[in-house]
Image (cartoon, rainbow, N blue to C red; front, side, top):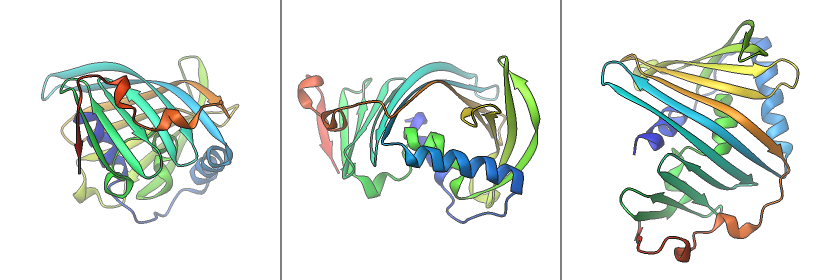
Length: 211
C-alpha cells in the first residue's frame, strides 16, 4: 500500500535535530496551534509522480482528528482509529486490517501531515515566496539519518499571514515527488466519536483481518 509507505518515510527517524531558529519558531507555532485544538477537519490533494517508474497519480483526501482519534480517506484507502485500535480499509481488496495503534506508528494520519517536522529532521528557512497566489514561508527539512531513508528533502510551505501549513513536497532519491496540498482546514469541527470506530455495516462484503 504505497500511501502508507509515505507515512513510514516521514516518521521513520526519531532523533531530535538541530534546526534553523527562524524555521523552528514557525514550525513550533504550528505544532502548538494544532495540539491546542479539540478537533479539526482537513481536505488535501495528493500528487505522486516518478519519471523512473512512470508512476503518476492524483488523489483527494479528507481527515478528521479528535484528540488521539482520527479518520482519514485518501485514494482507495481509509484509516480509522479510536486511539487504541486502527483499521485500514483497502477498497481494492475488500479487506479491512485491524491492529493495535502501537504497531501502526508509521501510518499516515492527518495529525502527522500537520506536524511531520517534530522529530527526525533538520530544518532550514529558505525564503518568503508566493505559490498559488499565497504568500508563504519556504522551509526545507532534511532527514538526520539520510542513509536510512529513500528520500532526501521535504519542502514545506507555510502561509505568511496565518502561519498554517499549506503544502509539503517530498523528493525521493530516485527522482520521485510526493506533494500534499491542504485545501481546507476547519478548526474545532464537531464530530461524533462513532466516526472513529470501524463499523462493519458500512463495509458489506469486506473481510476483517486482525493482527
